[in-house]
Image (tube, protein in one colour):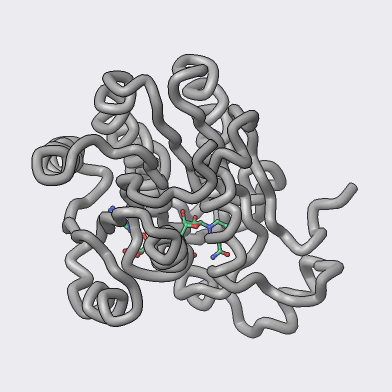
Length: 246
Ligand SMILES: NC(=O)c1ccc[n+]([C@@H]2O[C@H](COP(=O)([O-])OP(=O)(O)OC[C@H]3O[C@@H](n4cnc5c(N)ncnc54)[C@H](O)[C@@H]3O)[C@@H](O)[C@H]2O)c1
C-alpha cells in the first residue's frame, strides 16, 4: 500500500491561489510531482516556487477545451500520465437571480462545470491506460444548500456533485472519483464576497467558530488521493467546521 503520493503526477487546476495553491503545496511537500494550471498568474506562481518544489505550471483557461487538451498533452509528453487530477478552478460571480444574465450563467457553468468535464476528459484516457487514477472535484456546501444571490454558483456545484458520482460509477474500479465540499474558506474568492469574517461566522453558525484556512482543505485532498482512502468512491467529504451537522 502506497500511503503518500510520492512520485505521483498531480495536476491542480486553478492552483495559483487559495485552496488550489494550498493543495499544490501539500502534494509537493508529500513528494508528488505537482503541475499547476493557472490563468497567466506568473507573479503568484513565482511565489509558490519559492516555498514548494513545483514541477511545472501551465497557463490554460479550463473552459477552453482545446487549451485544456494542449496542456494535458504537453504535461503527458514531458512527464508521463497524470495520476491525480484536482479539478479546483472555479468562480462564484454572485448576483441576485433576476439580475443574472445569460452571459453570467454561461461563465459560471463553463468554468465550474464544463471546465471539470474538459479536464477530466483530457486526463482519463491516460489513467485508463494505467488502469489507475484519482480525480478530486472541488465542490461546495452550497452545492447542497443553495444560497440567495449565488444561484449560478450553487447550481454549478450541485451539478458537480452528480458529475462526481456519475464519473465514479463509470470509471470504477480503475479510477476513484471523489469530491470535497468545503464550508467557507478564507481565500480571495471569499474575501470578494463578504463584508466581514465575524458576520459570516455568525450567519453560518459554525460550531468550530471560525472560517477554514486553505491548508485544512488541502489535507482532505491529500487524504482522498492516498491509499488510506482507497475505499472511497463517489463520496463528497465536507470540511465545514460542523456547519452542516443536522
Ligand atoms: N473559498 C471558499 O469559501 C470556498 C468554499 C467552497 C468551495 N470553494 C471552491 O474552491 C475552489 C477554489 O476557490 P478559492 O476559494 O481557492 O478561490 P480562488 O479565487 O483563490 O481560486 C480560484 C482559482 O481558479 C482560477 N480560475 C478561475 N477561472 C479559471 C479558468 N477559467 N481557468 C483556469 N483557472 C481558473 C483562478 O485564477 C484562481 O486561481 C473553487 O472551485 C471554489 O468554488 C471555495
